[in-house]
Image 1 (cartoon, one colour):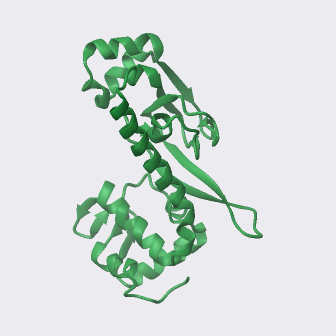
Image 2: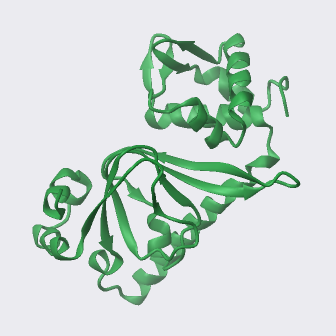
Image 3: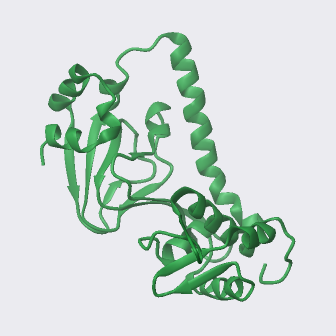
Length: 235
């Protein structure tokens, strides 16, 4: 796939003037990657904006666990075409604070930072840097979720996914089937075995419904768990 074709496939870039999109053709690049390949590694300088064309990308941080080596913390699972991957680091002239790992064959469009932001006045530059710094701070804060009860973290993740990507049905809010139990565990900062046990407990309380059609969330039940109204379960 060439850059011009990629631009046509990404609606998010169609809002830009045609003259700008045409300029991207000479400076952009389409990168094809296979499963388990990295787009970038943590600590690498963030110089290019990266847009997902197709495929699936996991943004991962490996956080130290006292006396037990490292734990993989899944920051985000990105699969929507046109999604901008870690734009805060690029805008903030920073380094990536996570690894980006492809879970299947994936294509991305890479555009140099200068191509999208060739000129900025001092006020715009200041605001952009402030927003970028805030985004990087929030990203790093995800490593500190270990201070809350694991049950609350899992319930909060399910509620967020239901709000962002869920589809309302008669059983509850159905989560996308592409989100695996491993992904849910990573987003919650717990082991897959712990997640499975908690899903079973949530199901007993009416907070989730598991079937061959997928995983369904009942928000009103999980909200009580996140709020601490239900104190049963592991800590």
